[in-house]
Length: 138
Image (cartoon, rainbow, N blue to C red; front, side, top):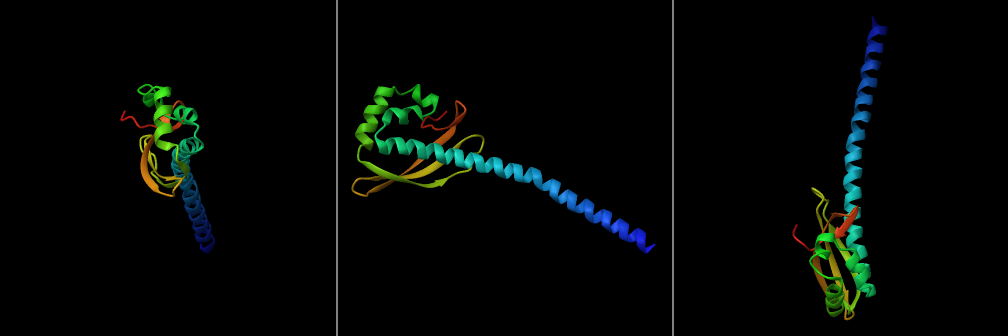
């Protein structure tokens, strides 16, 4: 009798361990998916800020979502960015939200030549196969 109890206990323990391990796989998958979206949103904002700091406003325009680009011409964006961002010397990504329903926001500090910092919250969403900064409200 003692042997059958030991065998039953071993089977139950093995089943419990299997359930925990296999149950953890979907949880880990969800975590990795959320983490990937977080980094994609954060990196989209950082790449856009990189282009602004470099004065490459045409590249920054290309990193915006298509709906925003359809509402603002490249020439207008480049002109307005040159007026507003020409004094940038750096930036700091402060925070990024986990994308929910594909939309996220990234809080970023832009730093000018004098060291003054302005905080912005940039909406970011998937567009054309990647996350892009998207100032439009759609």
